[in-house]
Length: 166
Image (tube, rainbow, N blue to C red; front, side, top):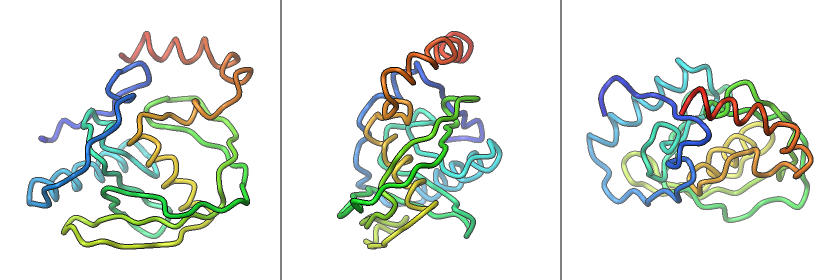
């Protein structure tokens, strides 16, 4: 991977791919996780998915205030009916923030860097982050969840990011 991990921006086609499942749990994966984590903190993010650094793999890291968490090959087993509105932003869409409704609680099944399976119920902020990051693994950006009217309002800003960053 190297030390030159860079966040890619909206408009880059790599952000729209469905990421591939991770099958090999080795030292290279652990090094990648370390770099991904560092990059997230350097960029001042609370989550960062592999596709955001141009790697189409099903892995993300996040920190909801309790230290770094690594999520590999995530799958939602359940999402609450109850939704909550919160402002979201994205390192791949700098300067754009919007209120978004998402389920307030989720049950997540995932693997760690050793390949062990875990199941966890998350709520509030952590649930928000894992849903946002898991979207990246399916080629979905948070602005895709906005209404057409809201997206239209952001269109010139989004186009500007694509022109400047890609």
